[in-house]
Image 1 (tube, rainbow, N blue to C red):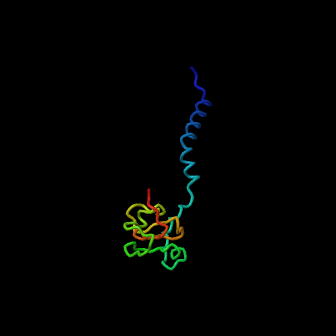
Image 2 (cartoon, rainbow, N blue to C red):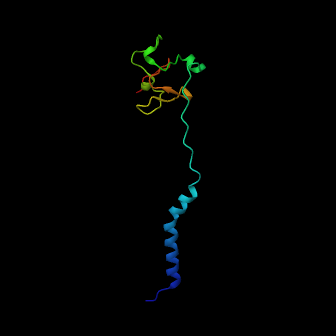
Image 3 (tube, helix red, strand yellow):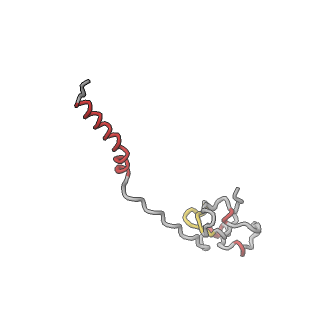
Length: 111
């Protein structure tokens, strides 16, 4: 049985190329590392949208006819922060973070 050096060289080159594809693909995709997202600024109470929805950052002090005792941003469907965070994003105020202990008149119980 004879060995063909051309075939052996081809198989070695094919195996090397196949093994290096993941490395080359990773290098091609690696660019500058994406910047970490800056935290959202807190919603000012004087913001027009906050005033329109009677937002407050302390639900314990709310005196609004629509307020339900025990309700706060933390248990609202619009609040999108992880459990336990003091502040987080709200879909009603997309450019600001709201207090988990806050409240507004658009409050809707999280399901």
